[in-house]
Length: 389
Ligand SMILES: Cc1cc2nc3c(=O)[nH]c(=O)nc-3n(C[C@H](O)[C@H](O)[C@H](O)COP(=O)(O)OP(=O)(O)OC[C@H]3O[C@@H](n4cnc5c(N)ncnc54)[C@H](O)[C@@H]3O)c2cc1C
Image 1 (cartoon, rainbow, N blue to C red):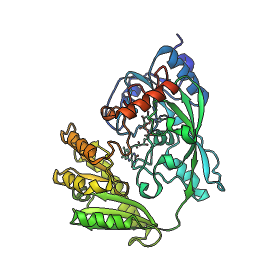
Image 2: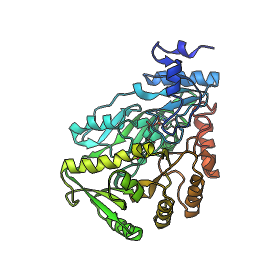
Image 3: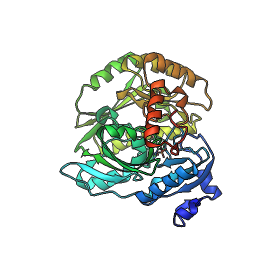
Image 4: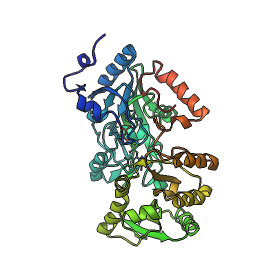
């Protein structure tokens, strides 16, 4: 059997100890053994790799920036396939507002490149500096502007996927479900055609703070009817205090237009900077475990009240009901949180995916979907084995 090293140029494969340590986990901190790392540079490299894995039976784990929070890119005695050398950005089509882009392109790099055409991809996860287009499609990412722009599924026109047989698919319309939100279980995304939108000319922000939760949620419902609204980010009193704001229920609302109170770019950067510093601050404060339940609107008051009473620092994309409570390692209250999500009719994962961390909560119908997709696209089970369910 041909070795992995013999398949590629020197420098495209590593089995060095220190490399394998780095690639043995993603941002979830879930760790697993890594057999090696490959950096494909062309679609054909990925095809040869998939064919090799089908013959050897070795599991391949596609990896973007490794910012995932549920162990989706954690190997389990696997070869990790790093997309960072799949990095071409096609010319933006200004008329049709589209771009063709390789899977390993980080979001901020794409948006900096598109700025000259006045366009951008408006799905912006908190990890926007490094998260890749491939990882964002694979997790169907949402993020800071989800209340206005939705998630990746709203912006992906076509996906090029190399499946577990080494076949290349151009997935459009309904077929996209084989890649969107599938966390790499059907194959490796190598390219995508994305829809874009215009960069807003004017933006402004207002920071609302409330003592009373019911009052805050009333105001949130009113804000959601405003067509200029472009972000609605929540911090509970514990999270607000950590970024130096008054310890109250806080809502950061962004508008496309001048109706927010803060309009100068320094003032806005200051507020967004505080919000975006929160994840790192919470980790430093001893709360590294990030959850992402999505609650229906009528369950938000009870859920936020419970989290705050439990002194669990919480923030999130309130406009779409996604909360990020942060826990200590092995916090027993995580199970209670998910019991509450289930009772409320919410989703266990609002945006991070299932990965290894949440696969035990996969419903029977979700598992049946995974099995059907595996049979069609990955019959030898070589891509992200054991993920999602
Ligand atoms: C500070 C912080 C803030 C975050 N904020 C948000 C947020 O607001 N919204 C949100 O949705 N998420 C958020 N996340 C989670 C994470 O950043 C997203 O899920 C992101 O889309 C992952 O991109 P990535 O390139 O890092 O993917 P990775 O972590 O490398 O991989 C994620 C999953 O996708 C698969 N995958 C990666 N690349 C490919 C590919 N080319 N083909 C097939 N499968 C692939 C992997 O196997 C894995 O299952 C945040 C994470 C952090 C650390």
